[in-house]
Length: 169
Image (spheres, rainbow, N blue to C red):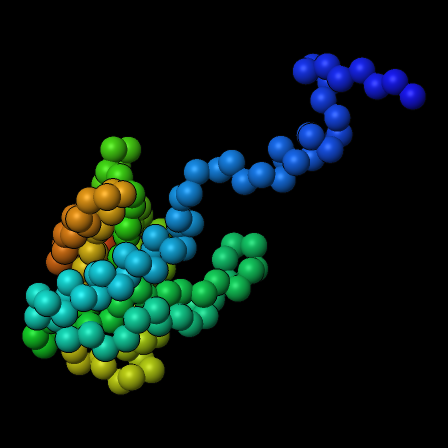
């Protein structure tokens, strides 16, 4: 049996061997980047006078509009003096498109507030002053990470429900 081998029609075994090769560039997955970012952020906060209390606090916070259970997470809980800080960590490989802090949207802020309220209730910390900080990291390959702390990036007041007296003016 004669087989014609043409570069346009390679053998099936050749096709499979090419498909089985991992030709993707070696890029760390986002979860690995995030975990490394959280470790660096925790060390940076500690070096800047924060006392770390907890990392990755997770708790159910309710259900979304479709009835699916939602879990809230706070990356780092720490004390800055006598202020209880709930810290969101955002790490990116580059700030070319947007700064990492831009990913802390109003929706994310609301979720962190809901989670922090549960944290405060669980540990009986209602009397403590609270603050919401963000640690931004830009971790470009081959360079030292750029780390920025933004203290008080948002507050609960902008999310409080306004009361209605019932009077229409």
